[in-house]
Length: 287
Image 1 (cartoon, rainbow, N blue to C red):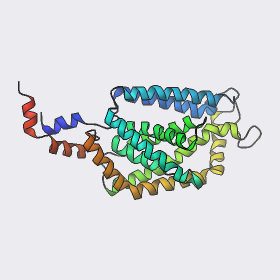
Image 2 (cartoon, one colour; image 1 turned 45 degrees about the horizontal axis):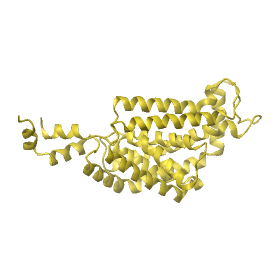
Image 3 (cartoon, rainbow, N blue to C red; image 1 turned 120 degrees about the horizontal axis):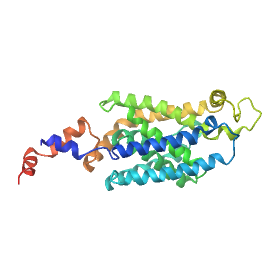
Image 4 (cartoon, rainbow, N blue to C red; image 1 turned 120 degrees about the vertical axis):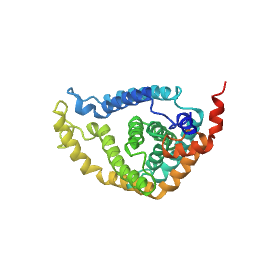
């Protein structure tokens, strides 16, 4: 076997997307969709306990997911990097704290997910939001929704083509950051909108109404109340990715190569070719 072939099989993203991983991510996302979208799916009257119950279920599912991710997929080096990036994200978040929509925490999530893979990004989103909540005292019924929303931001980085490098990569990540930040604001609104206004308002959730009617009121509510904040978050994240992206991506890729779990791709092939001499691979096949 060639040195390149052995190298490629020996390395992968910090959290590789195995079949088991894909199933776990899909299950967690389905539960998350139900948790966020229960008003649009339920035909019964709204209960003030429903979001809290669903939040507890969501926490349990995420806990099971993390155990599954650690079952042979998340090695000690990846856990160390995950802990470091989560701590850095937790320290960055209070610097802005969402003031006027300014939010810095997603910059590191997007860049970390780009280097270490979307599965790693899913875990990084949750652990970063959890760590920042513990640091700032922001633990509450909203936290599971924030964790899952941030996890989706990290997971979605996988849609950016892996072959992009240089300026094109940074531009693509910045564009993705705008869409992800806006989507995060929408799903967070959906988590509390049914309970915020109460009955009687033109923008209120109406139990038993068709999902389309409630969705229309929700869109109007989001545009009227939080679009400015969401746009601020989108601009902040995109600018942060554009400014810090090249340096942070280079540093994370350097750390990834040294830890020997760099994402599979052209850079990984080149690196393994340089570090695994051909004679070593030939020697491994001798009896």
